[in-house]
Image 1 (tube, rainbow, N blue to C red):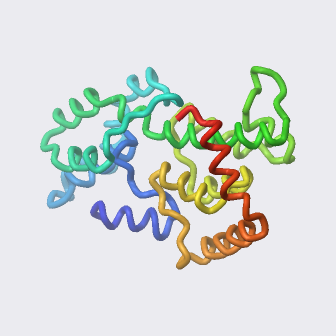
Image 2: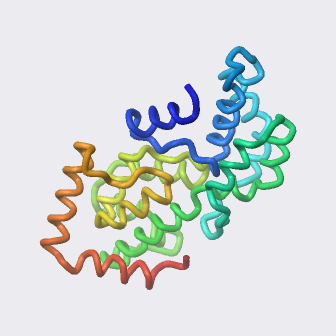
Amino acid sequence: MNLEETNELLVKYGKYSELYAKDLHDAIIMYVINKRIGDWNNENYSFDSIDRWENKFEQILKNHKVDQKYYYSEKTMNVYNAIMNIDTDSDFEEYVLSNSEIFFTSYSALICFIDDFIKIRMTEQDVIADEDEKYSWHRIAKEKGLDSSFEIMLSRLKNDGILPKREQLILLGIHLNMVSKDINNMLRLANMKSLYARDMADSLLLYLLRNAEREDPDLLFNNAMKYIYSTDN
């Protein structure tokens, strides 16, 4: 498949995000797919070459963790265009190394957004334990009687830069009492498609969220105001 077909497969049928130029794993895939166009039999850009590129950058990945406080405002389209216009492997390697801060803070804004909502909900519920557990998802999960799946998901996002599936993020938003606008903001930060009415599951969710907002007209306003006053971003 070419890049457009791959993204359609991921988004429309797989319910994932499309390939994201600021994610190093995705950037490698985008580069390989682009190089394969017109030269499908070139072993240098076979499926196995993705592993070779990841192994090449493995040491760099080990020495970088996703920074929850800082992220870089380079436009995704600029990164995408740069990758699509790279001619040689050495140029691609040089581009990644010289712009490592972009690739290793890919989801920092998303992490900040989720952490701020965790802080809001815990402050409301007064479930803060001690300083070590302050504003942690673990405390919310314990109060709600939830299993460890969301905790594992958030840990993988923060520590390894592994993006959850779209449905997982939406469910997290529901547990954090987000309204539709909040969930769409979160999906946007994850480079995922907003809730859309032509999808059966999304249309049901939109209906339920809008009903919740009608039942509690202050919910949308309160979430917005509390986010403004709680965030460091």
